[in-house]
Length: 298
Image (cartoon, rainbow, N blue to C red; front, side, top):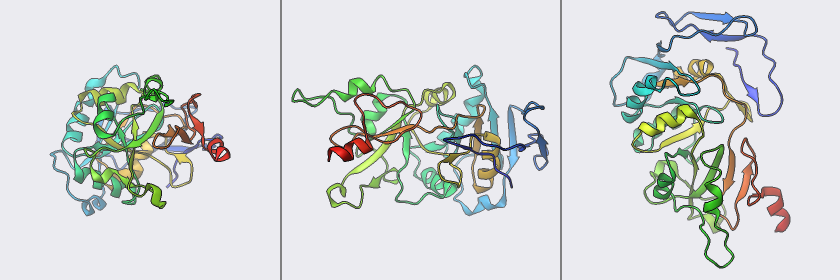
C-alpha cells in the first residue's frame, strides 16, 4: 500500500495518492490526481473495521462496529459535527484529532484502558512518555507542578513568558503531579540524578477544531503525534491515517484538511533553564536555551 507522507524538511514527490471512497460500501478505493480532481467526502461515514480490532480490549461505549470519519471545517464553523466524537472520547474511544501542527491520536486522560489501547494502536513502548492536551492553564497546574514563577533571587518568572506562547505550537516538559495517571509518565532517565523525576509534556494547541473538542471535554486528552514509520516524517492526510490505523483498532478520525509538515517545538522546563530539545513550528524565544548552547556552557 502506498503511503503519502511529507518530510519536516524538503518536499514530497508523490504524483498519485489514494483516497478511500466514503460511501455505504467502504471497501471500494478510488484513485484521484490531486492536481485535476477535487477531493470529495461525506461529512459522517463509517468505515468497516478489520477483524484485527478484536485483539484489543473492547471499549466501553456503544456504536456501530466501524471507524467513524467526520470531516469538519478547519475554521471550526461546523463544530456541531463534533458532538459524536465528544461522546466517544468520554466513553473510552481512541481516535485522531487535528492540532495546530500535525494530527494526533488521542483519548481521555481519565480512562486507563483507553490509554493502554492508544499505546497498542500506535505500538508505543510502556516506557515512552505521552503528552497531554490541556484545556487551560488550570489543567497544567492540576497535572504538573507548574512553571517556574520567579523567586526574587534571580530566577526569572518563566510563567509570565510562557503565557505568550500558549495556546501555540509548543510542548513544554514539566514535572508531573500525583494527579497524572501513571500510564502517562516516564520515570526519569538512566542517569541516577534524575531517576526519581517523573516528567510529562503538556500542550494547548492553537487550533479551532481542537479547541472546540477540548471545550466540551471534562478532562485533558492524552495524545501522541501520528508519525510515519520513517524517521522525522508525519502522515498529514486524514484519509490515509484512517486507512493505516483503522485496522489497528482506531475508533474515529476528525478530518480538518491536511496539516503542515512541522511538529511542535519541545522545551524541557525541568532543568535550571528552559531548554529546546526539538525545534519545530514554534520559534525559539529569547528565554529559551538551545541544546547545543547549553552543552557549550557546560
